[in-house]
Amino acid sequence: MLGITADNKLKRLIVVGDRVLIKPKDPTDRTASGLYLPPTVQEKEQVQSGYVIKVGPGYPIPAAVEDEPWKETEEKVKYMPLQAQEGDVALYLQRNAIELQYEGEQYVIVPQASILMLERSEDLL
Image (cartoon, rainbow, N blue to C red; front, side):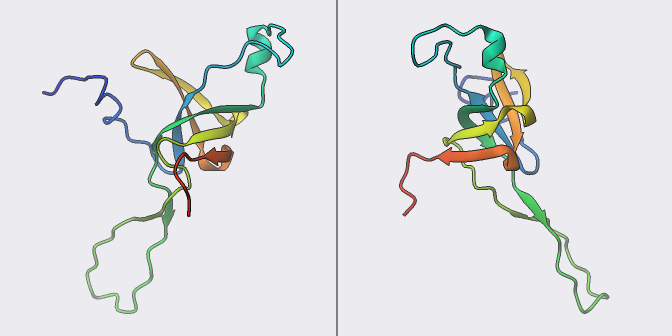
């Protein structure tokens, strides 16, 4: 049995459907003018940001109807991929996020529809 290391601990996780696993950025505890904010105010922010760690396969696409029902076909599920990719920075709605802790780290799982914007470091051209 292989041991869990920092390199492979997240490889065992499988994100299901149209969901995205995000590592939230550390929230800022100050306003732009330098005032400190209590944790209750920070938690009530509607939009949060974080790094996309893992992405689900996407939205399932229904199988095409065959004209010849006597033929045996192998039903393979096909998916429409998500826009989010690993390594993106995502702005997402906090109210739809499910918080979890895995291996001592804090993560959130959000559906693709809750992601408002993505920032990708590579060129999209």
